[in-house]
Length: 513
Image 1 (tube, rainbow, N blue to C red):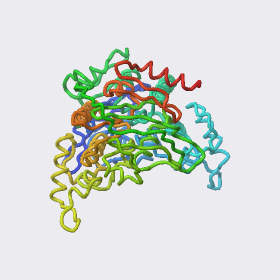
Image 2: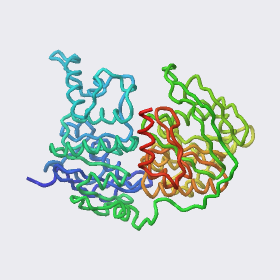
Image 3: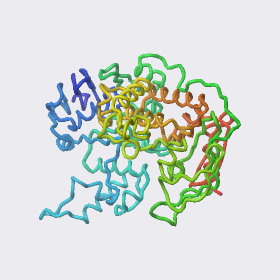
C-alpha cells in the first residue's frame, strides 16, 4: 500500500495581481497528524480550499492524488464523499438550531419516504457527541454553548461524515490553553484509531506538541517538510523556516516610561446579559490604566473580559449597566460607540469578520470608516484621494500583503484582515486602545509587528488594554496584569512578579471562594 493517503503535486493558483500558490507540493502519510505552517498570506488556507473542492477543479493547475487515485473535486460534497472534511477557522454553525440539527445539516438522516428521521438524527448525534466528550443533550441550541464546545460540535459533525482525512484551520484560535490542550489530545486519540489530520495553526507550541511532520509554506511555495516523529523540533526551528531568518525575540524591547497620571479608569462596573437580563456577566469590576502603560487582562473562556471591554466602549454590549468611567480624570457618560471614539477610546474586537470589518468593502474604505470626518471635504463628501493616501500609508506601515488598497478585505488572509482592523482604529487616533485577542490567528512575524505598534503607542503617552488568552503574550507585553474569573476581578499582578502558574493559581483559588 502507498504510504501516502494524500499527494498534492505542483498546485498553482492565481488571483488577479497575485499568485497565491506556486507549484506547491504536499505529501501526507496514512494515520499521521501533519501541520501546515507559514506566515499570513503564505497560501495555507488556499491550498486546503483546493483540496476540499472549495476552489473547484479547473480554477487551479496541478494534481490531487487521494488514496492512489487522481481526484477532480468540483465542490465540497465531492471531497466529503471520499472522507475529506474541512473545518474552517470561522465555525459554520447556525446559532438558533440545535446541536443535532447543525451536525446533520446538508447530510440529513431520512426515512424511506424521504422525510427527515428526527429520532435517528438525535440518536446519531448523541453517539458522535460521546466520541468528542460533549455531555450536553443533542437538543441544546448552539448559541447556548461556548466556543470550545462549538469546536467539538464541528469535529463531531465531521465524524458523522465518516471522515478519513480531517483538515482543521486554526482549530484552537478562539480557545484558552486548557480547551486547546483537550482538543489536541483528542486528535492524538483519534490518530491511534487511524484518523489522518492536517492542521493549520500559528500556535507553534501546539505544532511541536502534536505533529508527526510539519510542512512550511512561504510566499505561496513549499519550503520544506520537517520530520517531528520524535517531537524534538522546537519553535525556533519552525520560525526559521517560516520567515527565512532567526527571530531573536518574540517581544520587542521598550522603555517602561509609565506616568503617574491615570488615563482611563472604571469603577464598580456591572453588566447584565443583553437577552437573559437576570444574568450578571460583569460584577463590580474596577481597574485603572496609566498613561504610557500596557495593561493585560487574563482569564479563562467566559471570564467576562470581552463583555467588560464592549460594555465600556459605548455600551455596545449588555443591559442594566452601572458604574463609572473616567478618561483623563473626568467622568464620561458614553452613550454609544461614536461617543467613545470622540472621547479617545477605541475597541479592537476579537471578531474581525463579524463586528470589525466590512468584508465586501475595500481596504481604503475600511481603514477610514471609524473617523470619516478626517477624510471628508466640502459638504462632508469623502475626499477619495485623501482616503487612498491614508490607506496606502497604513498598508505600508503594517506591511499588509495586498495587490491594491482597492482589494476587498474579504479577499485577504486572516492576518492581513487583522492588520486592516488595527489600521482602522489607529487612524481614529485614540488615547486609550482596548485590544481584544489582537494576535488571534496570525503568524509570529505579524504578531511582532503588532507588538511594535503597541510599544510605539505607549511611548507616545497613550494607554493600551490587552485582552489575551495567550499567557506568554500577556507576560511578554504587559506592565501589569489583571485576572478575571466568572465576571469578577480576582487578582492583579505586576508583570515582573507574574508567571503562568501564579495567574492560573489565582483563577483556581477564586473558583473555591
